[in-house]
Image (cartoon, rainbow, N blue to C red; front, side):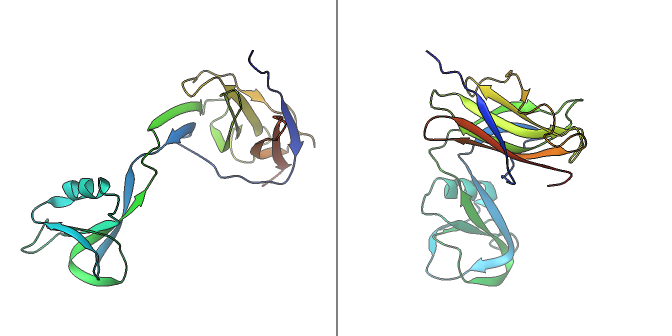
Length: 212
């Protein structure tokens, strides 16, 4: 028998990190690497894994992606050695390098599956949405909340929440956590926090005011 969840709401002065994808509220996992570019910089030391001539950026990046010991690479971009690339164990001790560019790898967990599920998209009623919060429920469903309104700080800015049956559910019904402000008209609701306590009661905290 599936549990029925009720959100208990509490006003508090809180803040939470926000998640955005093209003005949408999305669930996502990443399983790739990104690279920070360091123009005209090399990193010296006993740190070279392997150098290859005429490899170029894309092949060198792929080689570094597939090597857990690779922290980055240096790529010649001008001169006789152009497109020669060296992967490295670390990027420490930066030095000026007129012939190339170095890249530092920022890795995400390789075990994380790649998936994106849009669960709220701005519309004519709520073109502004921010302050995304996600909480897993014991029965496998997902509780989500965000602040939304015509613009940031508008008098109609309210906390919306929904409970998704699974990550493929993109048609969940969004509801007001509290339809009207506790403090009257002209007061915005800000930055929801969802918290599942040890007794499996789902709580929502947020703040109210003319500004955060």
